Length: 252
Image (tube, rainbow, N blue to C red):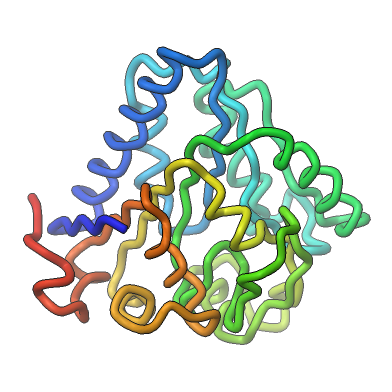
């Protein structure tokens, strides 16, 4: 896994968007379509804004898959990741082929249906984040590193749910759903390339555990270190607890 550290969130997001945009253009130059996975959450705001502004990407040939979604949350709720993707990515760039996770009705049936579509062909590029508890998608610790199922119904731990309150998506812990549909760890690792965007000081401890600690289900995102084409984008705040030799030089 390659690690790139930037002076602040804006510089980090711009660099990650340039990387993603370049990759999409290169793949679209040789392939009829490209399959991507997109993360959501507050950490991805700046990155997605800049990615949407990247030039010369034929988004009509991009097929999008959803990383995770709460079980039982209406699409109109401010915290809905379907709403997030429709407003912050799909609607902005005109993606025509997308597979959103509907957790309102029959979540297991949704996981199976979208999972079949996802597993039908390789994913070219996955955008992910890392949670304050080290989670990857909604795979909270201890994460399942073994299942080959594309999507799982997972329980959300208190640390994960508190993060959602802290980011302002919910007014209280009691309002945060206790379950979600999540892409599995092994499915994420099947992507040909992974771009992980992780800003902010509140992620620093999780970053240190996942980068410098053992590769373990107790630090789910640590598994990214096993992927040959994964790049972790950090800002100075999220990289602040890493050893200097690990985080490398901070870029402008």
